[in-house]
Amino acid sequence: MNTNAFTPDQTNYLDGFAAGSGLGRSLKVLQGGATFTATLGITEERKRPGEETSLADFGRAAQDRDLDAGKKLTPEEMAKRKLNGLDTWDMVLEHARDARFPSGTDVFMIKFQGMFYVAPAQDSFMCRLRIPAGIMSTHQMRGIATLAQDFGGGFADVTTRANLQIRQIGPKHTVDVLTGLHDLGIINRGAGADNIRNVTASPTAGIDPQELIDTRRLARQMHHYILNHREMYGLPRKFNIAFDGGGKISALEDTNDIGFTAVRVAMGNESVAPGIYFRLTLGGITGHKDFARDTGILLTESECVPVAAAIVKAFIEHGDRTDRRQSRLKYVLDRMGFDGFIKEVEKHLPKGIALRRFLLDHCDARPTFDAQGHIGFHPQKQAGLSYVGVVLPVGRMTCDQMRIVCTIADLYGSGTIRLTVWQNLLISDIRDENTDAVRQALLDAGLHYSASSVRAGLVACTGSAGCKFAASDTKKHAMMVAQYVESKLLLDVPVNIHLTGCHNSCAQHFIGDIGMIGTKIGEEAIEGYHVFVGGGYGSNQAIGRELFNDVAATELPRTIEQILRGYLSSRQDSSEFFSQFVRRNTIEALREIFSSQAMEA
Image 1: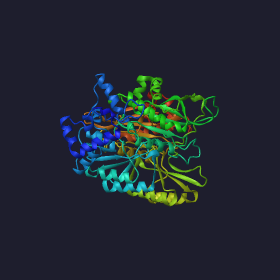
Image 2 (image 1 turned 90 degrees about the horizontal axis):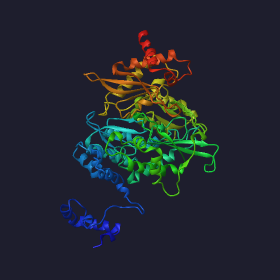
Image 3 (image 1 turned 45 degrees about the horizontal axis):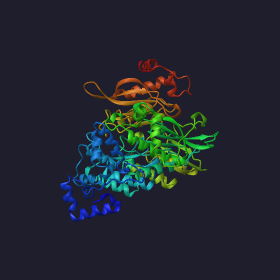
Image 4 (image 1 turned 90 degrees about the vertical axis):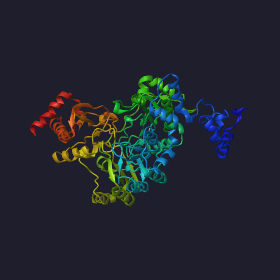
Protein backbone atom coordinates (compact mmCIF):
# COMPACT_ATOMS: atom_id res chain seq x y z
CA MET A 1 0.00 0.00 0.00
CA ASN A 2 1.51 3.34 -1.05
CA THR A 3 0.40 5.47 1.90
CA ASN A 4 2.53 8.42 0.82
CA ALA A 5 0.13 8.93 -2.09
CA PHE A 6 -2.56 10.33 0.22
CA THR A 7 -3.09 14.09 0.10
CA PRO A 8 -3.32 16.10 3.36
CA ASP A 9 -7.11 16.33 2.90
CA GLN A 10 -7.34 12.56 2.50
CA THR A 11 -5.15 12.06 5.55
CA ASN A 12 -7.40 14.32 7.63
CA TYR A 13 -10.46 12.45 6.35
CA LEU A 14 -8.98 9.07 7.39
CA ASP A 15 -8.17 10.35 10.87
CA GLY A 16 -11.69 11.77 11.19
CA PHE A 17 -13.23 8.51 10.02
CA ALA A 18 -11.12 6.53 12.48
CA ALA A 19 -12.04 8.81 15.37
CA GLY A 20 -15.76 8.63 14.59
CA SER A 21 -15.84 4.88 14.19
CA GLY A 22 -13.74 4.10 17.25
CA LEU A 23 -11.13 2.39 15.09
CA GLY A 24 -8.58 5.09 15.84
CA ARG A 25 -8.88 4.55 19.60
CA SER A 26 -8.34 0.82 19.21
CA LEU A 27 -5.28 1.32 17.02
CA LYS A 28 -3.83 3.90 19.42
CA VAL A 29 -3.88 1.30 22.16
CA LEU A 30 -2.17 -1.22 19.93
CA GLN A 31 0.36 1.19 18.47
CA GLY A 32 1.30 3.12 21.64
CA GLY A 33 -0.80 6.21 20.97
CA ALA A 34 -0.13 6.71 17.25
CA THR A 35 -2.87 8.23 15.13
CA PHE A 36 -4.73 6.14 12.58
CA THR A 37 -2.85 7.60 9.62
CA ALA A 38 0.49 7.16 11.38
CA THR A 39 -0.41 3.52 11.98
CA LEU A 40 -0.91 3.20 8.22
CA GLY A 41 2.52 4.71 7.69
CA ILE A 42 1.32 8.15 6.66
CA THR A 43 3.51 10.99 7.87
CA GLU A 44 1.52 13.61 9.80
CA GLU A 45 4.11 16.32 9.33
CA ARG A 46 2.78 19.22 7.29
CA LYS A 47 5.42 20.88 5.15
CA ARG A 48 5.25 23.99 3.08
CA PRO A 49 6.56 23.60 -0.48
CA GLY A 50 10.35 23.57 -0.56
CA GLU A 51 10.78 23.24 3.20
CA GLU A 52 12.54 20.33 4.84
CA THR A 53 10.90 20.78 8.24
CA SER A 54 7.29 21.31 9.18
CA LEU A 55 6.85 24.83 10.50
CA ALA A 56 4.65 23.41 13.27
CA ASP A 57 7.59 21.24 14.38
CA PHE A 58 10.30 23.82 13.85
CA GLY A 59 11.39 23.69 17.49
CA ARG A 60 11.19 19.91 17.62
CA ALA A 61 13.81 19.60 14.90
CA ALA A 62 16.17 21.66 17.08
CA GLN A 63 15.42 19.37 20.03
CA ASP A 64 16.14 16.32 17.85
CA ARG A 65 19.58 17.66 16.99
CA ASP A 66 20.46 18.01 20.68
CA LEU A 67 19.18 14.52 21.45
CA ASP A 68 21.03 13.03 18.49
CA ALA A 69 24.18 14.66 19.86
CA GLY A 70 23.65 12.89 23.19
CA LYS A 71 22.59 16.01 25.10
CA LYS A 72 19.90 16.18 27.77
CA LEU A 73 16.97 18.53 27.26
CA THR A 74 15.70 20.70 30.10
CA PRO A 75 12.40 19.68 31.77
CA GLU A 76 10.70 22.57 29.99
CA GLU A 77 11.92 21.33 26.62
CA MET A 78 10.71 17.81 27.43
CA ALA A 79 7.29 19.22 28.34
CA LYS A 80 7.11 21.10 25.02
CA ARG A 81 8.17 17.91 23.26
CA LYS A 82 5.19 16.04 24.69
CA LEU A 83 2.64 18.78 24.06
CA ASN A 84 2.75 21.84 21.85
CA GLY A 85 2.14 24.87 24.03
CA LEU A 86 -0.57 26.10 21.68
CA ASP A 87 -2.56 22.94 22.39
CA THR A 88 -2.95 23.57 26.13
CA TRP A 89 -6.47 24.99 26.05
CA ASP A 90 -8.05 21.73 27.20
CA MET A 91 -5.57 21.62 30.08
CA VAL A 92 -6.70 25.07 31.20
CA LEU A 93 -10.36 24.06 30.89
CA GLU A 94 -9.79 20.95 32.97
CA HIS A 95 -8.01 22.80 35.78
CA ALA A 96 -10.68 25.52 35.86
CA ARG A 97 -13.49 22.95 35.93
CA ASP A 98 -11.89 21.26 38.94
CA ALA A 99 -10.81 24.59 40.54
CA ARG A 100 -7.35 23.04 40.65
CA PHE A 101 -3.92 24.62 40.45
CA PRO A 102 -1.33 23.04 38.13
CA SER A 103 1.78 21.23 39.29
CA GLY A 104 5.07 20.12 37.77
CA THR A 105 5.68 21.20 34.21
CA ASP A 106 1.95 21.92 33.78
CA VAL A 107 2.72 25.21 35.55
CA PHE A 108 5.07 26.05 32.70
CA MET A 109 2.78 24.82 29.91
CA ILE A 110 -0.25 26.83 31.05
CA LYS A 111 1.86 29.98 30.63
CA PHE A 112 1.39 29.50 26.88
CA GLN A 113 -2.16 30.75 27.48
CA GLY A 114 -0.84 33.76 29.39
CA MET A 115 -1.68 32.31 32.82
CA PHE A 116 1.00 32.19 35.52
CA TYR A 117 0.53 30.22 38.73
CA VAL A 118 2.49 32.43 41.12
CA ALA A 119 2.72 30.22 44.20
CA PRO A 120 4.24 30.31 46.77
CA ALA A 121 4.15 34.13 46.70
CA GLN A 122 0.39 33.99 46.11
CA ASP A 123 -1.89 30.98 45.81
CA SER A 124 -3.45 32.33 42.63
CA PHE A 125 -2.88 33.07 38.96
CA MET A 126 -1.54 36.15 37.23
CA CYS A 127 -2.67 36.82 33.67
CA ARG A 128 -0.30 38.66 31.33
CA LEU A 129 -1.90 40.39 28.36
CA ARG A 130 -0.75 41.27 24.86
CA ILE A 131 -1.25 44.94 23.97
CA PRO A 132 0.90 45.73 20.90
CA ALA A 133 2.69 49.07 21.27
CA GLY A 134 0.87 49.42 24.60
CA ILE A 135 -2.07 51.12 22.87
CA MET A 136 -5.67 50.18 23.68
CA SER A 137 -9.15 51.64 23.51
CA THR A 138 -11.17 52.76 26.52
CA HIS A 139 -13.61 49.95 25.69
CA GLN A 140 -10.81 47.45 26.20
CA MET A 141 -9.55 49.04 29.42
CA ARG A 142 -13.05 49.12 30.90
CA GLY A 143 -13.41 45.45 30.03
CA ILE A 144 -10.09 44.65 31.71
CA ALA A 145 -11.21 46.57 34.81
CA THR A 146 -14.39 44.49 34.96
CA LEU A 147 -12.43 41.23 34.63
CA ALA A 148 -9.96 42.33 37.33
CA GLN A 149 -12.82 43.27 39.65
CA ASP A 150 -14.95 40.18 39.05
CA PHE A 151 -12.20 37.55 38.92
CA GLY A 152 -8.98 39.16 40.17
CA GLY A 153 -7.66 41.34 42.96
CA GLY A 154 -9.44 44.53 41.93
CA PHE A 155 -6.41 46.15 40.28
CA ALA A 156 -4.09 45.88 37.29
CA ASP A 157 -0.34 46.43 37.00
CA VAL A 158 1.35 48.25 34.14
CA THR A 159 4.56 46.42 33.27
CA THR A 160 7.92 47.48 31.84
CA ARG A 161 6.77 46.08 28.48
CA ALA A 162 3.95 48.65 28.19
CA ASN A 163 1.55 45.87 29.07
CA LEU A 164 -0.99 44.95 31.76
CA GLN A 165 -1.23 42.13 34.26
CA ILE A 166 -4.30 40.99 36.19
CA ARG A 167 -3.43 39.33 39.50
CA GLN A 168 -5.01 37.23 42.26
CA ILE A 169 -7.14 35.13 39.89
CA GLY A 170 -8.68 32.06 41.51
CA PRO A 171 -8.22 28.63 39.90
CA LYS A 172 -11.82 28.33 38.71
CA HIS A 173 -11.79 31.72 36.96
CA THR A 174 -8.87 31.37 34.54
CA VAL A 175 -11.13 30.54 31.62
CA ASP A 176 -13.50 33.40 32.54
CA VAL A 177 -10.59 35.84 32.31
CA LEU A 178 -9.15 34.41 29.10
CA THR A 179 -12.44 34.26 27.23
CA GLY A 180 -13.32 37.74 28.52
CA LEU A 181 -10.04 39.06 27.12
CA HIS A 182 -10.62 37.34 23.80
CA ASP A 183 -14.08 38.91 23.61
CA LEU A 184 -12.36 42.29 24.01
CA GLY A 185 -10.05 41.53 21.10
CA ILE A 186 -7.06 40.91 23.40
CA ILE A 187 -5.45 37.63 22.37
CA ASN A 188 -2.72 36.81 24.88
CA ARG A 189 -1.70 33.43 23.49
CA GLY A 190 2.02 32.96 24.06
CA ALA A 191 2.19 35.82 26.57
CA GLY A 192 4.26 33.58 28.82
CA ALA A 193 6.61 30.57 28.63
CA ASP A 194 9.23 30.37 25.88
CA ASN A 195 7.65 32.84 23.50
CA ILE A 196 7.86 36.34 22.08
CA ARG A 197 6.53 38.76 24.70
CA ASN A 198 4.43 41.87 24.16
CA VAL A 199 5.75 43.86 21.18
CA THR A 200 6.64 47.38 22.27
CA ALA A 201 7.00 50.63 20.33
CA SER A 202 7.32 54.35 20.92
CA PRO A 203 4.43 55.30 23.25
CA THR A 204 3.89 58.62 21.46
CA ALA A 205 3.87 57.04 17.99
CA GLY A 206 1.74 59.03 15.59
CA ILE A 207 1.45 62.07 17.84
CA ASP A 208 5.09 62.99 18.55
CA PRO A 209 6.35 66.24 16.96
CA GLN A 210 9.91 64.95 16.67
CA GLU A 211 9.35 61.32 15.62
CA LEU A 212 10.91 60.07 12.41
CA ILE A 213 8.26 57.44 11.73
CA ASP A 214 5.01 56.15 13.24
CA THR A 215 5.81 52.69 14.68
CA ARG A 216 2.24 51.68 15.60
CA ARG A 217 1.66 49.78 12.37
CA LEU A 218 4.92 47.86 12.73
CA ALA A 219 4.11 46.74 16.27
CA ARG A 220 0.66 45.68 15.13
CA GLN A 221 2.02 43.80 12.11
CA MET A 222 4.56 42.00 14.28
CA HIS A 223 1.88 41.16 16.85
CA HIS A 224 -0.41 39.57 14.27
CA TYR A 225 2.47 37.77 12.58
CA ILE A 226 3.28 36.10 15.90
CA LEU A 227 -0.34 35.17 16.57
CA ASN A 228 -0.77 33.60 13.14
CA HIS A 229 2.49 31.69 12.70
CA ARG A 230 2.77 28.54 14.75
CA GLU A 231 6.55 28.39 14.37
CA MET A 232 6.85 31.58 16.43
CA TYR A 233 6.05 29.58 19.59
CA GLY A 234 8.16 27.24 21.68
CA LEU A 235 11.44 29.16 21.45
CA PRO A 236 14.43 28.15 23.60
CA ARG A 237 13.53 31.00 26.00
CA LYS A 238 11.53 34.23 26.09
CA PHE A 239 12.16 36.87 23.45
CA ASN A 240 11.60 40.64 23.23
CA ILE A 241 11.08 42.89 20.20
CA ALA A 242 10.79 46.70 20.18
CA PHE A 243 10.41 49.47 17.59
CA ASP A 244 11.67 52.99 18.32
CA GLY A 245 10.48 55.72 15.98
CA GLY A 246 12.74 58.52 17.23
CA GLY A 247 10.16 60.15 19.49
CA LYS A 248 10.73 62.01 22.74
CA ILE A 249 10.01 58.93 24.90
CA SER A 250 12.38 56.00 24.46
CA ALA A 251 11.04 52.55 23.60
CA LEU A 252 14.18 51.11 25.29
CA GLU A 253 14.75 49.04 22.17
CA ASP A 254 18.42 48.58 23.10
CA THR A 255 17.33 46.33 25.99
CA ASN A 256 15.50 43.91 23.63
CA ASP A 257 16.59 40.78 21.81
CA ILE A 258 15.66 42.58 18.59
CA GLY A 259 15.63 46.36 18.46
CA PHE A 260 14.59 48.47 15.49
CA THR A 261 15.76 52.08 15.76
CA ALA A 262 14.51 54.65 13.27
CA VAL A 263 17.24 56.76 11.67
CA ARG A 264 17.45 59.33 8.93
CA VAL A 265 19.91 58.88 6.08
CA ALA A 266 20.59 62.31 4.59
CA MET A 267 23.46 61.31 2.33
CA GLY A 268 23.02 57.86 0.82
CA ASN A 269 25.08 55.91 -1.69
CA GLU A 270 24.50 53.75 -4.74
CA SER A 271 22.57 51.14 -2.72
CA VAL A 272 20.91 53.34 -0.06
CA ALA A 273 18.74 56.28 -1.05
CA PRO A 274 18.20 59.17 1.39
CA GLY A 275 15.22 58.62 3.67
CA ILE A 276 14.02 57.04 6.93
CA TYR A 277 15.24 53.53 7.76
CA PHE A 278 15.59 51.26 10.78
CA ARG A 279 18.90 50.15 12.29
CA LEU A 280 18.83 46.51 13.39
CA THR A 281 20.24 45.75 16.84
CA LEU A 282 20.47 42.33 18.47
CA GLY A 283 21.11 40.67 21.83
CA GLY A 284 19.86 43.13 24.46
CA ILE A 285 19.43 41.57 27.91
CA THR A 286 20.42 44.11 30.54
CA GLY A 287 19.78 41.67 33.37
CA HIS A 288 22.86 39.91 31.99
CA LYS A 289 24.68 43.23 31.56
CA ASP A 290 24.36 43.43 27.79
CA PHE A 291 22.68 45.96 25.52
CA ALA A 292 21.57 45.17 22.00
CA ARG A 293 24.41 45.87 19.58
CA ASP A 294 24.19 47.43 16.17
CA THR A 295 24.53 44.90 13.35
CA GLY A 296 25.44 47.40 10.66
CA ILE A 297 22.21 46.48 8.87
CA LEU A 298 19.78 49.06 7.54
CA LEU A 299 16.14 48.08 6.85
CA THR A 300 13.15 49.65 5.21
CA GLU A 301 9.86 49.65 7.11
CA SER A 302 8.44 46.82 4.99
CA GLU A 303 11.48 44.63 5.71
CA CYS A 304 11.34 44.79 9.52
CA VAL A 305 8.73 42.11 10.25
CA PRO A 306 10.04 39.47 7.80
CA VAL A 307 13.59 40.05 9.03
CA ALA A 308 12.43 39.72 12.66
CA ALA A 309 10.72 36.44 11.75
CA ALA A 310 13.92 35.15 10.15
CA ILE A 311 15.90 36.09 13.27
CA VAL A 312 13.45 34.22 15.49
CA LYS A 313 13.69 31.12 13.26
CA ALA A 314 17.49 31.20 13.44
CA PHE A 315 17.22 31.53 17.22
CA ILE A 316 14.86 28.53 17.36
CA GLU A 317 17.40 26.49 15.42
CA HIS A 318 20.51 27.49 17.35
CA GLY A 319 19.34 28.42 20.85
CA ASP A 320 20.48 26.24 23.74
CA ARG A 321 17.78 23.81 24.89
CA THR A 322 19.92 22.07 27.50
CA ASP A 323 20.71 24.96 29.87
CA ARG A 324 18.09 27.62 30.72
CA ARG A 325 20.82 29.98 31.92
CA GLN A 326 22.47 30.05 28.51
CA SER A 327 19.42 29.94 26.27
CA ARG A 328 18.78 33.60 25.44
CA LEU A 329 19.78 35.14 22.11
CA LYS A 330 22.76 36.91 23.68
CA TYR A 331 24.45 33.57 24.25
CA VAL A 332 23.80 32.39 20.69
CA LEU A 333 25.50 35.57 19.49
CA ASP A 334 28.38 35.06 21.92
CA ARG A 335 28.83 31.52 20.63
CA MET A 336 28.34 32.07 16.88
CA GLY A 337 29.41 35.69 16.53
CA PHE A 338 27.25 38.32 14.84
CA ASP A 339 28.44 37.46 11.33
CA GLY A 340 27.87 33.75 11.82
CA PHE A 341 24.39 34.27 13.20
CA ILE A 342 23.41 36.73 10.46
CA LYS A 343 24.39 34.11 7.86
CA GLU A 344 21.88 31.75 9.47
CA VAL A 345 19.25 34.50 9.48
CA GLU A 346 19.76 35.06 5.76
CA LYS A 347 18.78 31.44 5.11
CA HIS A 348 15.27 32.21 6.39
CA LEU A 349 14.69 35.49 4.58
CA PRO A 350 11.86 35.61 2.03
CA LYS A 351 12.82 35.98 -1.61
CA GLY A 352 13.40 39.58 -2.57
CA ILE A 353 14.92 40.68 0.74
CA ALA A 354 18.68 41.12 0.92
CA LEU A 355 20.32 42.67 3.96
CA ARG A 356 22.09 45.95 3.20
CA ARG A 357 25.02 47.21 5.25
CA PHE A 358 25.39 50.91 6.02
CA LEU A 359 27.67 52.48 8.60
CA LEU A 360 25.94 53.91 11.67
CA ASP A 361 28.23 56.95 11.45
CA HIS A 362 26.61 57.82 8.12
CA CYS A 363 23.15 58.08 9.72
CA ASP A 364 21.91 61.23 11.41
CA ALA A 365 21.94 61.16 15.22
CA ARG A 366 18.68 60.13 16.86
CA PRO A 367 16.56 63.03 18.19
CA THR A 368 17.12 63.44 21.93
CA PHE A 369 14.95 61.86 24.62
CA ASP A 370 12.91 63.79 27.14
CA ALA A 371 13.54 62.01 30.44
CA GLN A 372 10.12 63.15 31.71
CA GLY A 373 8.24 63.09 28.43
CA HIS A 374 6.00 60.38 29.88
CA ILE A 375 4.76 62.66 32.70
CA GLY A 376 2.64 65.82 32.43
CA PHE A 377 1.17 67.72 29.47
CA HIS A 378 3.01 67.86 26.13
CA PRO A 379 2.00 69.24 22.73
CA GLN A 380 1.30 66.78 19.92
CA LYS A 381 2.27 67.25 16.30
CA GLN A 382 -1.42 67.72 15.56
CA ALA A 383 -2.12 71.43 16.01
CA GLY A 384 -4.22 72.27 19.07
CA LEU A 385 -3.85 68.84 20.68
CA SER A 386 -1.81 67.57 23.65
CA TYR A 387 -1.24 64.36 25.55
CA VAL A 388 -0.91 63.94 29.30
CA GLY A 389 1.28 61.44 31.09
CA VAL A 390 -0.54 60.16 34.18
CA VAL A 391 1.54 59.14 37.20
CA LEU A 392 0.94 55.57 38.37
CA PRO A 393 3.17 54.90 41.37
CA VAL A 394 4.96 51.57 40.71
CA GLY A 395 2.48 50.94 37.89
CA ARG A 396 -0.58 49.89 39.86
CA MET A 397 -4.18 51.04 39.13
CA THR A 398 -7.39 50.13 40.90
CA CYS A 399 -10.39 49.21 38.78
CA ASP A 400 -12.08 52.48 39.72
CA GLN A 401 -9.02 54.44 38.61
CA MET A 402 -9.00 52.58 35.31
CA ARG A 403 -12.62 53.55 34.69
CA ILE A 404 -11.96 57.18 35.59
CA VAL A 405 -9.04 57.31 33.15
CA CYS A 406 -11.36 55.91 30.48
CA THR A 407 -14.01 58.52 31.21
CA ILE A 408 -11.46 61.34 30.91
CA ALA A 409 -10.11 59.87 27.65
CA ASP A 410 -13.62 59.62 26.20
CA LEU A 411 -14.74 63.08 27.31
CA TYR A 412 -11.62 65.03 26.43
CA GLY A 413 -9.53 62.78 24.15
CA SER A 414 -10.04 60.22 21.40
CA GLY A 415 -10.78 57.24 23.65
CA THR A 416 -7.18 56.04 23.38
CA ILE A 417 -4.96 54.85 26.24
CA ARG A 418 -1.22 54.43 25.76
CA LEU A 419 0.88 52.42 28.24
CA THR A 420 4.62 53.08 28.56
CA VAL A 421 7.66 51.03 29.56
CA TRP A 422 7.98 53.45 32.50
CA GLN A 423 4.90 51.86 34.13
CA ASN A 424 2.51 54.73 33.54
CA LEU A 425 -0.02 55.74 30.87
CA LEU A 426 -0.76 58.56 28.45
CA ILE A 427 -4.12 60.03 27.44
CA SER A 428 -3.77 61.49 23.96
CA ASP A 429 -5.59 63.90 21.66
CA ILE A 430 -6.73 66.40 24.32
CA ARG A 431 -7.78 69.76 22.89
CA ASP A 432 -5.72 72.59 24.36
CA GLU A 433 -8.82 74.34 25.67
CA ASN A 434 -9.61 71.20 27.72
CA THR A 435 -6.27 70.75 29.48
CA ASP A 436 -7.40 72.60 32.62
CA ALA A 437 -10.50 70.39 32.83
CA VAL A 438 -8.34 67.27 32.49
CA ARG A 439 -5.98 68.50 35.22
CA GLN A 440 -8.88 68.98 37.60
CA ALA A 441 -10.51 65.65 36.68
CA LEU A 442 -7.27 63.79 37.42
CA LEU A 443 -6.80 65.56 40.76
CA ASP A 444 -10.42 64.93 41.74
CA ALA A 445 -9.83 61.22 41.08
CA GLY A 446 -6.72 61.13 43.25
CA LEU A 447 -4.50 60.79 40.18
CA HIS A 448 -1.64 63.06 39.21
CA TYR A 449 -0.17 64.48 36.03
CA SER A 450 3.00 65.82 37.65
CA ALA A 451 5.34 64.31 40.18
CA SER A 452 8.54 64.87 41.99
CA SER A 453 11.50 63.61 40.01
CA VAL A 454 11.70 60.63 42.36
CA ARG A 455 8.16 59.36 41.82
CA ALA A 456 8.16 60.12 38.09
CA GLY A 457 11.24 57.95 37.54
CA LEU A 458 10.26 55.12 39.88
CA VAL A 459 10.10 51.62 38.35
CA ALA A 460 9.48 48.41 40.32
CA CYS A 461 8.78 44.82 39.38
CA THR A 462 6.08 42.77 41.11
CA GLY A 463 8.38 41.77 43.97
CA SER A 464 7.93 39.07 46.58
CA ALA A 465 4.27 39.99 47.14
CA GLY A 466 3.46 38.36 43.81
CA CYS A 467 6.53 36.58 42.45
CA LYS A 468 8.19 33.48 43.86
CA PHE A 469 11.62 34.46 42.56
CA ALA A 470 11.80 37.89 44.23
CA ALA A 471 13.84 38.30 47.40
CA SER A 472 12.17 41.58 48.43
CA ASP A 473 8.81 43.35 48.26
CA THR A 474 9.88 45.84 45.61
CA LYS A 475 6.62 47.74 45.10
CA LYS A 476 6.21 48.29 48.84
CA HIS A 477 9.81 49.40 49.26
CA ALA A 478 9.68 51.65 46.18
CA MET A 479 6.76 53.56 47.70
CA MET A 480 8.63 53.79 51.01
CA VAL A 481 11.57 55.37 49.16
CA ALA A 482 9.36 57.83 47.26
CA GLN A 483 7.38 58.96 50.30
CA TYR A 484 10.46 59.37 52.49
CA VAL A 485 12.73 61.09 49.97
CA GLU A 486 9.99 63.48 48.79
CA SER A 487 9.50 64.59 52.38
CA LYS A 488 13.22 65.34 52.76
CA LEU A 489 14.39 66.99 49.56
CA LEU A 490 13.36 68.37 46.17
CA LEU A 491 15.13 67.36 42.98
CA ASP A 492 15.47 69.78 40.09
CA VAL A 493 16.46 67.11 37.54
CA PRO A 494 14.96 63.68 36.77
CA VAL A 495 16.51 60.62 38.41
CA ASN A 496 15.37 57.13 37.46
CA ILE A 497 15.19 54.66 40.38
CA HIS A 498 14.62 50.99 39.50
CA LEU A 499 13.90 48.21 41.99
CA THR A 500 13.95 44.59 40.85
CA GLY A 501 13.39 41.54 43.00
CA CYS A 502 15.63 38.92 41.42
CA HIS A 503 18.24 38.15 38.76
CA ASN A 504 15.57 38.13 36.02
CA SER A 505 15.68 41.94 36.37
CA CYS A 506 12.17 42.65 35.13
CA ALA A 507 12.61 46.25 36.35
CA GLN A 508 15.99 46.49 34.58
CA HIS A 509 17.95 47.68 37.60
CA PHE A 510 21.23 47.88 35.67
CA ILE A 511 19.96 50.78 33.49
CA GLY A 512 18.57 52.98 36.29
CA ASP A 513 20.38 56.07 37.52
CA ILE A 514 19.98 54.22 40.80
CA GLY A 515 19.19 50.52 40.51
CA MET A 516 18.53 47.94 43.20
CA ILE A 517 18.23 44.16 43.16
CA GLY A 518 16.59 42.32 46.04
CA THR A 519 18.52 40.01 48.32
CA LYS A 520 18.23 38.22 51.67
CA ILE A 521 20.60 39.40 54.38
CA GLY A 522 22.09 37.26 57.14
CA GLU A 523 20.84 34.12 58.80
CA GLU A 524 17.49 35.75 59.49
CA ALA A 525 17.04 36.37 55.74
CA ILE A 526 16.14 40.04 56.17
CA GLU A 527 14.84 41.69 53.01
CA GLY A 528 17.40 43.98 51.46
CA TYR A 529 19.07 45.24 48.30
CA HIS A 530 22.34 45.62 46.45
CA VAL A 531 22.52 49.20 45.14
CA PHE A 532 23.95 50.22 41.75
CA VAL A 533 24.48 53.65 40.21
CA GLY A 534 25.21 55.13 36.80
CA GLY A 535 23.04 53.05 34.47
CA GLY A 536 21.52 54.50 31.33
CA TYR A 537 19.99 53.76 27.92
CA GLY A 538 20.05 55.08 24.37
CA SER A 539 22.75 57.68 23.84
CA ASN A 540 23.39 57.56 27.60
CA GLN A 541 23.83 53.78 27.53
CA ALA A 542 25.67 52.22 30.48
CA ILE A 543 25.47 49.34 32.96
CA GLY A 544 25.29 50.48 36.57
CA ARG A 545 28.17 49.83 38.97
CA GLU A 546 27.61 48.30 42.40
CA LEU A 547 27.80 50.96 45.12
CA PHE A 548 26.47 49.32 48.28
CA ASN A 549 25.95 45.70 49.21
CA ASP A 550 23.30 44.23 51.52
CA VAL A 551 21.32 47.35 52.43
CA ALA A 552 18.36 46.38 54.62
CA ALA A 553 14.99 47.41 53.17
CA THR A 554 14.29 49.45 56.29
CA GLU A 555 17.46 51.47 55.65
CA LEU A 556 16.86 51.89 51.93
CA PRO A 557 14.93 55.21 52.02
CA ARG A 558 17.65 56.84 54.10
CA THR A 559 20.34 55.41 51.82
CA ILE A 560 18.68 56.83 48.71
CA GLU A 561 18.31 60.19 50.45
CA GLN A 562 22.06 60.20 51.22
CA ILE A 563 22.89 59.40 47.61
CA LEU A 564 20.70 62.17 46.25
CA ARG A 565 21.89 64.72 48.83
CA GLY A 566 25.50 63.86 48.00
CA TYR A 567 24.79 64.38 44.33
CA LEU A 568 23.06 67.75 44.86
CA SER A 569 25.85 69.05 47.09
CA SER A 570 28.80 67.78 45.03
CA ARG A 571 27.74 68.10 41.38
CA GLN A 572 29.53 70.68 39.25
CA ASP A 573 26.33 72.67 38.64
CA SER A 574 22.62 72.16 38.09
CA SER A 575 23.19 71.13 34.47
CA GLU A 576 25.16 68.02 35.48
CA PHE A 577 22.83 65.02 35.42
CA PHE A 578 23.06 62.29 38.03
CA SER A 579 24.55 59.80 35.56
CA GLN A 580 27.26 62.29 34.56
CA PHE A 581 28.09 62.95 38.19
CA VAL A 582 28.48 59.31 39.23
CA ARG A 583 30.42 58.35 36.11
CA ARG A 584 33.10 60.99 36.65
CA ASN A 585 33.72 59.65 40.17
CA THR A 586 35.15 56.32 41.29
CA ILE A 587 32.97 54.06 43.41
CA GLU A 588 35.29 54.71 46.37
CA ALA A 589 34.88 58.46 45.97
CA LEU A 590 31.11 58.12 45.70
CA ARG A 591 30.94 56.06 48.88
CA GLU A 592 32.87 58.75 50.71
CA ILE A 593 30.62 61.52 49.35
CA PHE A 594 27.42 59.70 50.21
CA SER A 595 28.65 58.52 53.61
CA SER A 596 29.43 62.11 54.58
CA GLN A 597 25.74 62.91 54.18
CA ALA A 598 24.93 60.31 56.85
CA MET A 599 27.36 61.97 59.26
CA GLU A 600 25.83 65.41 58.66
CA ALA A 601 22.27 64.20 59.21
